[in-house]
Length: 296
Ligand SMILES: Cc1ncc(COP(=O)(O)O)c(C=O)c1O
Image (cartoon, rainbow, N blue to C red):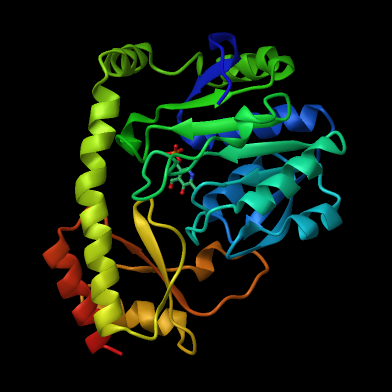
């Protein structure tokens, strides 16, 4: 990212960051927000509650379909470019270039949810879109995935002409996020502990994801594993099956997975399970996949 302290507004997570971004965009006359389809169902709700109408844009293996985005005529888009939620795909370099092109050809904005950027288990780190077009990108991130969601600590990086208005909205929403938490986090960062924490975290998470992938390849060979090695969950496509039925069977076998369909807006996709791996040991994941396969 390209950042100076005066562009930064501390928020209560990405959730409040997106809500504040929507308010600022609306006051500039942007009334329709394009959203990836699928995208997190909460994001849809946050945008709608901020008074914007939602324009779904399909996602494929390369990320959001920028040609389809262009056709919608929407002036703003909310994106998870590095690890698309929930499919887990990466916005390809070609699509990035197309998106920057789209951004440059009018009075348009990207709201960039840098979801899972710190949690990559292969390849080099990926720069934010914000770093390429700081005047057109509202960048949103939080400590929810890298530390703990209960902190409710997030940050917005804003184009300079948005800062005063967003800061004012934040002030009248809650008089500011808790200062003690911010001081503790700043100290954690300054001492290099956050970097060390991330490096430590990636080791078991990578191992857990690999165990899940291997177990799926062994027990469910017809499954199609989506996305890149990153984040806290894996999206697993099981074509020809019924998603609700799969979730019910999983639950009966005490395996807690969710279906992707809840995050679809208009798009239709094959049955897909979202399997969280970060909080389970490799042996637990292997056992869970064996149980899941046994129910099918
Ligand atoms: C796509 C996406 N972005 C961001 C977040 C984090 O939200 P917050 O920072 O408000 O906890 C989540 C949490 O579920 C998410 O799914």
